[in-house]
Amino acid sequence: MSPQALVVVNGTTPLSGRYPGIELIRGILLDTARKVIGDLDVSISELIGAGTRVAALLKVSGRTAAGVPFNEEGRLCGCVFAVREGLIEEITLFPDTSLIETALYRRRYVPDA
Figure 1 (cartoon, helix red, strand yellow):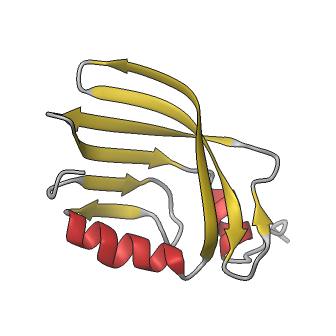
Figure 2: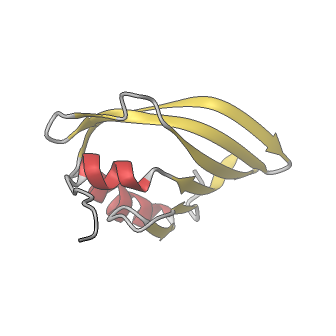
């Protein structure tokens, strides 16, 4: 990754946000994710690219920090990478925010009364 890389996690979860620069990516995003994610497996389902952009459909699954499996059913999320001179400059992730909220943060969605 480029030292000036930008990671954008879309949504409204505790992991969502813009993380410019490798120091913030490691110091905030990764440190925050480590608190709720025990093991993570990322696999690529599909790729398409043109120029400096590559779009991917990813399967992201694993175990929470408490050891509970998440995304065993294999739901996919979108991701776009910008690559220049062999380095990743930008990652924009479009995760399943409901999965993040319920699996990683144990939040429940209940009907409005």
